[in-house]
Image: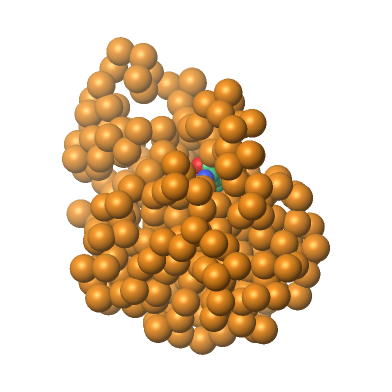
Length: 308
Ligand code: CP
Ligand code: NVA
């Protein structure tokens, strides 16, 4: 069963095929992401369940549009409307959904919910973000980097800010796509060591550098994300802002990266917190290409899952 659960759980050659498939589907649309039908409709006759236990704009809309462009149909379900976690086990929900739909995409809190869904479903399951990882986002980000700057292998990616779920998927990708990764942020918000060690074991250079100015030297790509993720307690907001203020991506920081460095943010962003508007709207920024590429990358992921 081709579940898409995490970037480290899919073979590197298959990840590469997915990126190439996404590129081909994007090219086939001749620069027009909108418009409801592709030339080919490989998902005709397929029903896809999109389950959200957390809010979403990009994931929800890009999956929904992507399925329809490929001729399939979607059912968008909010966790609150389902029996999920209200007594019915995840395993039973997975077995029931498998009698109705061909593919399940789930955005949830605990990674264990995703894993149990995949273990008990008879259809492929896609990770649409958990507290620990966000693999679809990083597939779109790899695609975006490569369309602007060529192969990402051997490049230097610098993450400035919170060591969160999006960072963790970058660490998975570093190992699978062969790029170097530097984390810069305050120690209490370091990523889990296991993500760094796993990437290192695959032969890439993964470092922690507390000084953001030193960290971005020689960077081909600078990335950040919100300082307070959806699963973080609201009460942590002020403390996190104080801890992370020095890691804001602003023009001064970008000026210390390579002159042609790209800037990425998965969005939604809190402008002038983790990144200034001058950077987000400036010459290094590819944030809206990342958002568009969610559509193309996820279409390729769904085709890989379903083998169509
Ligand atoms: N980047 C991302 O996953 O955005 P949403 O939370 O809007 O889906
Ligand atoms: N780290 C963020 C990503 C949102 C797409 C969160 O989990 O809230």
